Length: 319
Image (cartoon, rainbow, N blue to C red; front, side):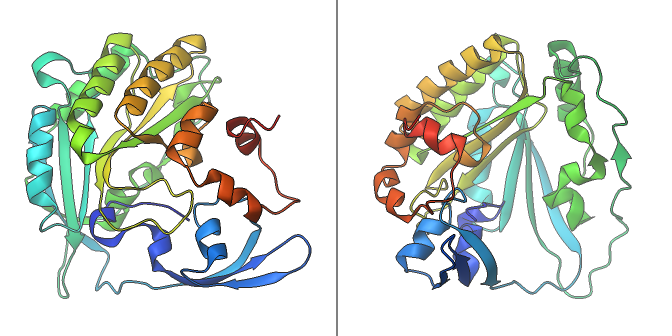
């Protein structure tokens, strides 16, 4: 429930729009949880350990149609990204960027900045939601390799795109939905997701160093998404979103080579005072979790005795 969208800088996380929910405990107790209630703050972002949410009530935003007004900007490096983002977030409710994580040198951090807002009443668009493609089988090895990655990123970065456009909301909010079984392209060994957030004051240096280390490693991600979190306070005791900049990546599983890369990235995030995202984690070190989520000890009293997870045992050194 700490899901964070492209509008976090103005609207906060999903849990900021939850007005109440019912929590079912394994002993049969049903708790009505309201904002500011300790059980509310423990459960949102609580890694599914406090019980079962049977229903919840949320506030919704009214929209007039399925269209999104878009603005696309290509930026040549990470410095340009931060300049564009500072200006765009003042007037656009949805902002996100794709980053070419294979670029190096003067083009380090180049990418495409996408800003959007819901179209007003009366807007008509010629755009339609794209038909779904299908990856029909899992190839014997990952299709995400260095030559393919560099070629794809080069072509995507240089692809013609209009500065302004009108689009169906689907491709903007859920770009992967039009490719069914997209995860198969990573091959039988699958992939790792790696996402972190670092404070604003350290963001440009930290993100730049992460991208440098990824490029040098020869590993990389088609899906490299960069966006910022606003200053709205988190609702959950263990919430990941906090003021700063977050980068999300997917890496094909190359065994020890991938884990070694992550260890070097962890050190950059740690030095910058950042945090890794528990909901996407498969190998976070316990010391990094406990440092970035200091409320973990207090949270333990809210865990349902019949609920458990390998993640929790790993990061809290409980077996």
